[in-house]
Length: 430
Ligand SMILES: *Cc1c(COP(=O)(O)O)cnc(C)c1O
View (tube, protein in one colour):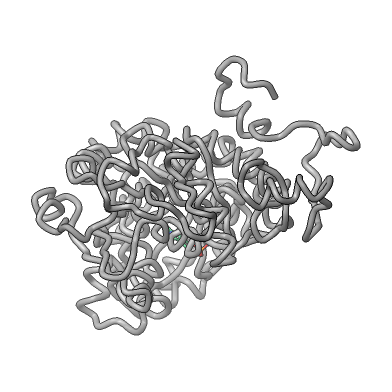
């Protein structure tokens, strides 16, 4: 596809980044199942290794199938470039890696995916990095948490699981004033429902494992760069602004301009951390993205119907779906999510812990799994699974109290899903 006119989302989700295979004319993007690429000659090889020419060397760094996915996600998010990697968690480390150094910190929302809380509060300490968790609705607290060693602010667009909607613009303004980037995990919203870069985000990260792939087949991650951040405005980001010893003193920002972060992610991040996405995974995710808008429309339609039905049901205490008029975030949804607030929410069952366990056991269409963003409807009782290790107070704070289940509404018939919930609630609350 040419760079011509600005195409609509539905066109770009099928075509962006792809062209018929130059060798065979294959219309679908081939799975380039190869580790290495033959150099034209020794000069070509030298130019590639010096980053003087862009091309394929070795699949830990770049692969043509993965490259199509990178360009597709970058285009859908409105960024200038993207780097794919092996999982959403890998994407988070890869996003922080060029920004942080020993002693640096990230100011992160308290409302994050459970695995991210663990990665940020425990594991990154091994690199000498740390995270400060703040309530991102309290902008003064965010400002107060940012110190001379803070290198990024991190949040999720729609936070999993509690139906929390982040005021991305307000956070972006705070990060901007401090001269640091805002990183938004856009996994639960997808670029179809929200494009954080349009609201001031510098970087967007994804677990492509979820809605982008859309059928629970492969893990993957992606970091999209807006290309708008000035990495040389202060001396906080030497990996991007200062000479890089491993490339004969090349300065990424000076050399690659708006693509500095993306080139660094490949030439240093993937080269040395090796969290590479494999071409098979990229293929599955490309297949998924072709129908992203259609699926998200149905996910939202079903979630709205089911959340409204649950909210009226006597056996249910409350429902935390941001798309319900009763949600405290309903006004933010109108601003950031005109096409709907996603398909992920929690609800509280009156019978408490025991009723929740019976509910997940009695459901027939919903699968009891630790995943989200599948075409299938999924449910998890966090208190007896993912949040088992936490104290009741910590569970409550995480929106995962003993009486709460989280659902990821799939794209099946909404009436069938409601009937399934109805019969299982009857058993659970008998
Ligand atoms: C699943 C998920 C992650 C982690 O992604 P993996 O692909 O499982 O590593 C991060 N953030 C959010 C919001 C997620 O849902």
